[in-house]
Image 1: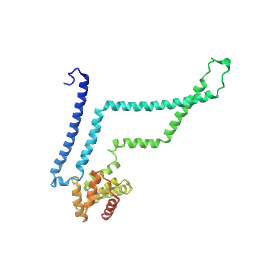
Image 2: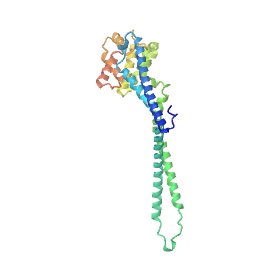
Image 3: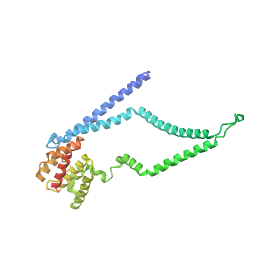
Image 4: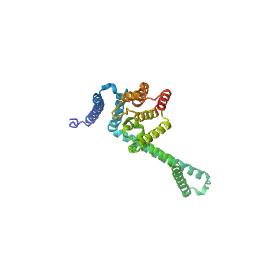
Length: 291
């Protein structure tokens, strides 16, 4: 209907407004579908919504809003973003050319200042510029050689930076990359581990826990270690267990109150919160008690 009109400006604006409307509908639909799936999954459990960790709904909603907004924005504003990228690239290229031209002009100025003044009878005589061009070429070659040498000297740092940028795209098949998610999936099914494999996994997890400097990741490693040691008791965790179920089984198996331990983990895992020094110390004391 919009394109049936002969007014191109009206058609273009109308299409863009429709796209924005559809984008909002997609975003709202994704949020509703996610929250509905959470309700469906919790209704299948005896505890109902009470077993949901605090902050889970807000965490999921924020994740969906950010990912969908960025993805839809790339579609809606593809042309302006492409023009911006082209402008940045052209500015960088012009800056590099300006630097080389400036160096060439400086070399030319130095050569001109060293040449003697022409005699009165030499007016109109063409002065050869071959030495200046040769020297400019030499300076250019030296600059290129210096850049290559600098890149070679910093090759490890450059390669590390490239790996850090693209590593999340290829992290799926690496063994070490699964460790931060032990507290979600892997260790919760520790019943399948043999005693030898459990001891090896526990040693590796203890090393990761001791080396970790980030407080949030360290607390998650500690929680994974708690699940692994809970798997050696008569009430091992299963993949379908929530943090509330982990707390109940841990309190029964280790005969201690895990209310603060479980609440802190929920806040760290789903609320993007950072544990305090006291909470980390309490977790370390608890892990030492259940060795």
